[in-house]
Image 1 (cartoon, rainbow, N blue to C red):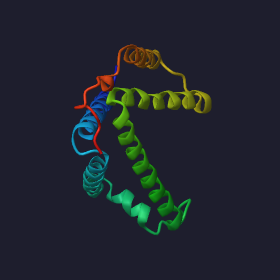
Image 2 (spheres, rainbow, N blue to C red):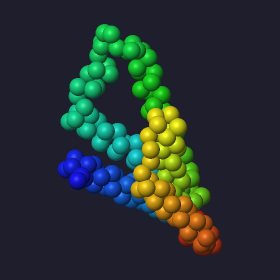
Image 3 (spheres, rainbow, N blue to C red):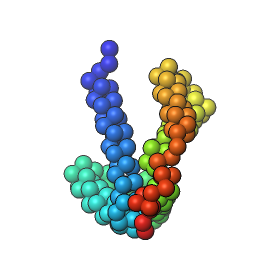
Length: 170
């Protein structure tokens, strides 16, 4: 029998997946029909930073204190932690910028299908390096992803409709 924590974790995972898909679809609409890439990047950056700061203040105070504090005996000093922290921020910003550029030429459905390949690489790492065994659920989910990609590629792209209305703006 599944415990309450497992069920709650599964529900959070499903909610996160739905919100990620909604984010990509709304980003596609905003990038192609309204302001363009610069405005979308600014809004994602601004609200992402504000929401993250609020979450950090509410839930992660001790971890932030550990990151920025003296932390004697830690595996790396404060300067190395800051380099890693800001490197992560820079690559995350580059990732969001790349997604916006992708949405200028394609649509959110293909972006979401492509992002699902990271789960495949994570599973391959778990099998090869950690020695975990995958359950049938993984293979069923991976089969559905492959089916979704084939189904998506079988039809014409919605961005090739020829309308001047759907032409991306910058």
